[in-house]
Length: 182
Image (cartoon, rainbow, N blue to C red; front, side, top):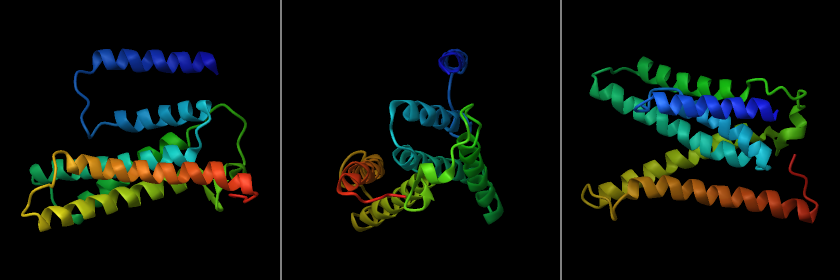
């Protein structure tokens, strides 16, 4: 396992040296999520926590690509749906790549009857979207301006951070009281 990790890190380093700019439409971020997921598992971080950030990043990538398509006059519901589909498939493919470990039974990696990573992705995506909608509402009520610099970045980041803290507390506190999470 350590040999594979070293090879993956070497490949990432070589790729970073060759690539001059990472564009939002490339799968670099999704591959980073996959590497991050395995790295977080090795560090003992639950998949639900990693999934929260993966869900937020996926929604962000979908939005960036939609803006890029809009600037290039690519319009229509089909293209936006295809955009979302591609990023969701990339995220799923990273998660379901065989890890070389024995197949883990789904009930060993679940929370509230759902796969932890999938739950985290759904929660992270919903929180990211809600924070973006809230930001647009605040901006509309403030004459088209943010209330403070970098508010558009701080709000989704803060929302994901808050939800991460809530799930971390759930994971750490509830089992101490005998509550079964799966």
